[in-house]
Each structure stands twice: as C-alpha cells, then as structure tokens.
Image (cartoon, rainbow, N blue to C red; front, side, top):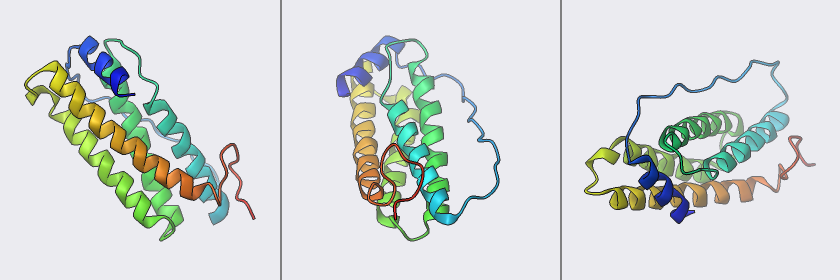
Length: 151
C-alpha cells in the first residue's frame, strides 16, 4: 500500500486540488439500534476498502480526500449509533483520520514529492490499522458480508 500511495502522489505531482464535496446519504426510516450499528459497520467497511483502491492518476489526491470524507461520515454515524460500544477503537480511528487529513492539507509544505508520499503513506497505514482494529472487534456482532446483527 505504501508504494501505491507513493506512486500515486508522485504521479499526481503532489498538487492539492480544491475541496471536493462530500456525498450525502439518502434518508431512510430509522432501523433498530442493532440493525443500524451493523449497517454502519458495513458502510465503514466499504468506505475503508475504497481508500485502499488508489490508482496513479492526476485526480488520485482528490479521490483520497473524497474517500476520507466518506470514512469520517461513516465513523461519525457509527459513533452515534454504537454509543459506548467500541468507543476506544472509534476514537483511535478518528484520531488517525484527523492526522491524515492534516497531512493532506499541508502536503504542499513537504520538502519533496517523496517526503509528501512518505508522510501520506505513514498516516494512511495508521488509518487502515485503526480501521482494521475497529472492524475486527465489530465483526463479532456484525460479520462481514452481513448488514444484520448476529444474535
């Protein structure tokens, strides 16, 4: 993953585009708390998978920012629905996301494209590790491939 991010950032010239708009989720009737938790876990699982699918293109940095916006929204929803469940893991993932977003905002201040790629790769690795920790814990209640709670 580190090499993919480095190649993407080097290929994109480490340019930082304008803010990309976040996506909005469609409203639906409120599901039960357990179903909502598993639905939000599934959404986060999907969003994290997208973050890992970068390609060397001119818009890779913008795509990463957009994907991170989606992850942040999914984490916020999960935090609300899950309450105290997985609080430590959610807080750690949120902290890693903030650090990565800060790195992306300040990417132009890096001394070189290689340094920028390394900084982003390091922070992205932290995000994926923290997300994996959270999703591993959540899998006991909400197995992958299922948006319904396990009993």
